[in-house]
Image 1: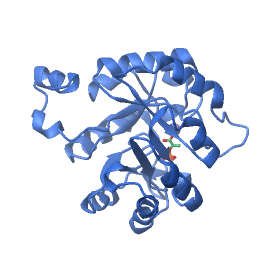
Image 2: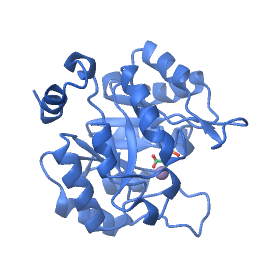
Image 3: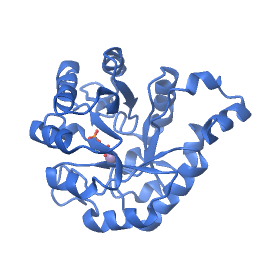
Length: 253
Ligand code: PEP
Ligand code: MN
């Protein structure tokens, strides 16, 4: 029984069996911003019995003048603060970025914008020695396109059970936040035998909706949730509106 399970058991919140598959709960800031920030995230994640922390040293940003991530400096900090309990999830947007994080990242993340970067998919699968690869659905991509991108990883040599698919919502004409989380897409991916997690942060774009949608994902028995959380959400350098506090993570885990 891990720490997390013990906590559920004590609080009597849910039947332990309901949570047995939620192996891939991932928390942390949109961008890694400093050593102090990451130490706080790691401390809270460890207390909650979580195993994965977002450690985003490379950020794909719409605007070229926005913060692009700490890069090499961030990687040195990660090497310094890594603990046995916590594994890092690092997004890569290029082959070079993969080479830089491959020894520190347990999970290699390929984000929505690179879901169909086929050369990156081929390179990552050919050189993959990590625990898992996390492939997010592009915000305008169909289920078939998502699964086809996963197939690139499999063709490249990654076992299907090392692939985690992440649903992060679609661009929406009707949702007040501009995005709607597509649970049906996620359920279809699950039906194909993939591990699937839900990102209620990019999937809602607003902190008020993150916890309810994360709870919905947990009730649907996905393999986990990826939640953006920050020690001081209002100071977050990226995706401030969707960041929840580290304290509020205890409402979920
Ligand atoms: C992220 O998870 O850091 C991210 C950039 O999300 P997405 O690729 O889904 O936009
Ligand atoms: Mn983000």
